[in-house]
Length: 171
Image 1: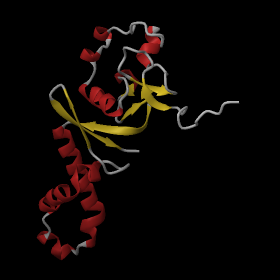
Image 2 (image 1 turned 180 degrees about the vertical axis):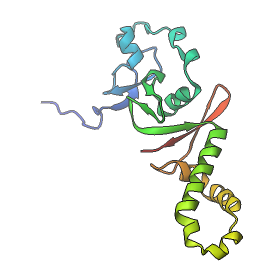
Image 3 (image 1 turned 180 degrees about the horizontal axis):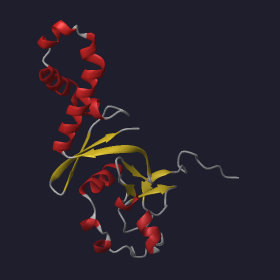
């Protein structure tokens, strides 16, 4: 009896088994991506049945496209709401434009100041504390990821349609 190498036959992210598709699939090597499965493609060397112009990306939100690009999944697997999630990848994500990330970081740092810093400073000395400088220094030294990503403290920058979008995993 021939043994198979368990490292070779693992499930996970892999290239789509359709010979002319460049998407990512989840499963064992040779698995089809969602689009190829839905379109009826096969792994036997025939043309990909997914029509490129039928991708629907023209109507997809910029943030959804950015997260799908970052995760390597099709945009149709992304659910948006307060947090973005994907059926093909674990976690919840905050996806922000540059202005939104600045505003979110400002709010988060204000909250941290109110809850953790200012109450440790005697009332008589608070007038000497420069909150704006403290927040500026916090972003300069730790970055936005440390402030906004409660999962791993990382910030991921993705360029979509000429705009930069910032992604933070939150769980």
